[in-house]
Length: 310
Image (cartoon, rainbow, N blue to C red; front, side, top):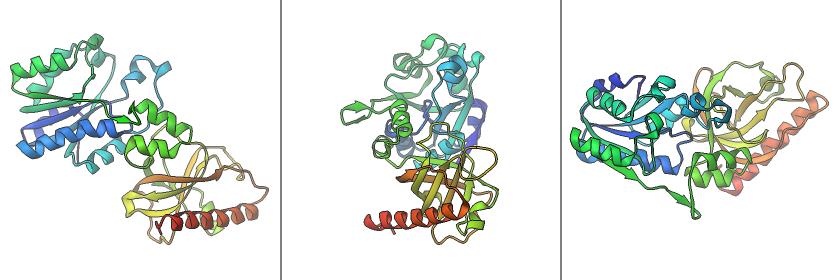
């Protein structure tokens, strides 16, 4: 998966270029339909399928007081784009100057940068100064510049349109099954394993301390998880501030994988949430905490076995 940081970098890719354009926060089933449309056309016609997103989220620039909590950062998006079969991701830096750019000027930059074969967007996608750009404008521009435009209809779940807002609400409410239905996969977090204070190892349950890039998180607590980036290895994760341990009450995401001996430091993990075991609790001493961890691991194994996942 190639990562591009400027429109001009599109010239480095194998032509012709097929672009899927959107914000794609969360990469839900609606986003997958747009991204998959570009991938399918690249497979039919040749060339390279590219997912085009914006960083930071445009709302963080235009209305920071109302900006949504991010479901995915760029690293997570890149990982999910690659899983969907795209060959490259272009993350366009977004600022007020970019927001003020006319829609036609933005498209002219794209067509100058590379031999553009197709553009794929959501049916109601808008862009450019004052949101003047839309599918109608894109099609007219494409006719004059030699590329086609595919507008992808919204994807529905139980009769309702799938959106990042709906996914975000489900995740924050802890409705994992609803989030899964909207995403087409388990909700997951993605980050690099960094060094922690080794408390889990001292208690006999080594954990990977995963850095968090997303801001929209499920409720604090203990979860049954699996790690798709590492063969679907299963385990237990704690998301929270560890109230039983003294010191700074900083948010942590710690993952213990069953029967895992490999050193994970420095590696990037995608951790998928399967089931919530309990809320975060405070224990009087570390022995009490150790006992609860043992019960959590047993409960997690039982839950996985009941679904033939272990």
